[in-house]
Length: 162
Ligand SMILES: [Cu+2]
Image (cartoon, rainbow, N blue to C red; front, side):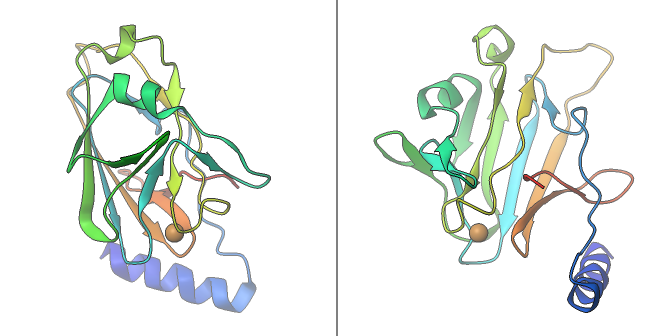
């Protein structure tokens, strides 16, 4: 079903040049202790934390800060300040928000695609305290073209820079 929606959206994008994906809200991109984030992507996409991304390139959230709030399965391949997930996979990378994330002094984090760091820099994911009224959730993020899309009850929304 979602694949069909994406296919339609992508097909429309080819005709009108602008796919017109709905943009995410800060609330869509808020994570709390216990939440899971699952990234799925076809090769050659892969998740990168740390290093630089965006256009013009700018420093992303330092990997040391990311490590304070997220734990990864599989572990990131680390080289200096750059940590990379596997290429492709559904999901290829899973992160869990650490129990003490909200007290770690890291207000938010961004990631990008290591293959397309300029085009696929995410918007900030906000780290919030645990909320007893809100059960832990799983955020499913997938690479669609050169965008990262997050599933929501209302449909997929874009979580990378406009
Ligand atoms: Cu990519």
